[in-house]
Image (cartoon, rainbow, N blue to C red; front, side, top):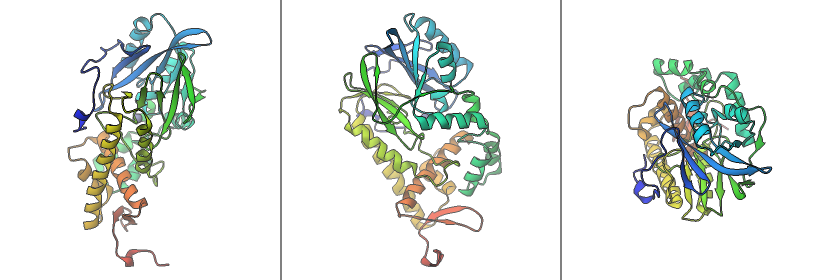
Length: 360
Ligand SMILES: [Zn+2]
């Protein structure tokens, strides 16, 4: 939760689009807010008025998870929120279930193409079809165990969550149009520039329109919660926090009064302040972890309560572990900490005496 939220401005106040309805936030841009059955209880989706090949219609940005509730809300929007026009294109900012879950269903229903980054397209296919997930399955349980998670009940329930992704994303379109950092795409006669972002998803694409001064920030620029930045079992040696902090610098290049349309939370201005808040937030957490690890080596499981002081359920534990490892990895890769694999098969991060280093 962002304690400095007052530094941001919400031009619509507390107004939210009702379930199954849209709310116009700028000419030709409609906001849809769908409920999610998680701690993160909603996702924002967007409709952009568009014309493709002389046909009038809408570009959809992000899709929600493949649940019947979300399909029902889409059905209502299809019949009452599109002014009788078709969906012409589906843009997905990244491969997480709340963004890509219903993309295949919407694309098939409207015979509309999916536009997404190449990396996220292929990762979505792998996770949707192989019955494994970012946050569950044997690989994830083994990975978290190697980072000190030892509660057998928690590990067992992580092991059992092997179909988490494919339940929320049962299918992915077989073809796509590639979104690439720096590309400009025409939506309804306006140019939207793709801004690649890393560290949250493999290749997240935010979209910025200079003429309307609007940023579709996806999950990379959220006003209230901080974007999850995690190390996952599939890329265990990653340094995603470095990538994330580098990525958000890009939003500093936008005009200071740009309107941010985030995937979670409300439309806001104050993007530069938000970049600063996120930088400070991670700097403070890195400092806390560093201090603890300097006193004595810590596993990620031991570091987790330093960053997350509240009680966590299994789902939140997987996020919190991934995020703690991300912070430890930044400290490790930047040379501020070392990593040691104990005889118990568990990684610890700290400052180790010279004799602990492998001899040359
Ligand atoms: Zn996401």
